[in-house]
Length: 216
Image 1 (cartoon, one colour):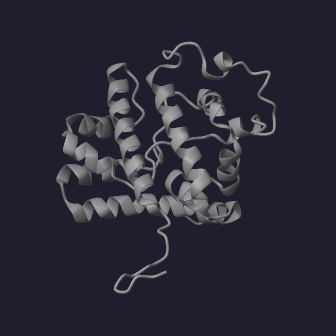
Image 2: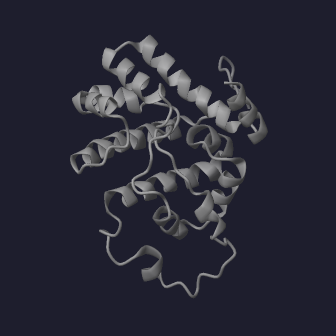
């Protein structure tokens, strides 16, 4: 029953709490990128990494506050090997979860957390999973069908470390970091808009994307 004086609109496509959780994951991802640089692993250009390294925590927070993931999960191949109907009685709990929390290191732990988020999102809002994580519809459906204990296996099949999303695009990351460093809300919104455009291109059917690439 609607209460007088209140407007009941449609549910938002992107759940507010999920956006907040994703911003936290994006922030952790930036910290891992910077930690990896200390170990000689650079996943972005030198200039972008230099600017990230010089950024204040507040600037890193603003970079992370996107409505889409800044990291690229690639669960599709691993999901093909997961049979949701497979019996679990032959899989001891020690084999499902592993005997040591140190297995895989920080990147695998982060990937497991990101996949847990993706699993919940795929179950509760498949459209949001597509928009926020770039999942194809079949990937979101398959992710929603797996059992929670299988997420650790899927995490183990991901690239280590996770690649930056749209890392090969010449503008996305440089513009995002530069505009965040400039502390211009308008410029930062425009930089985020490029991510939405790249996301929209990914969600188009394959042939259209190929035609678009040939024309550019």
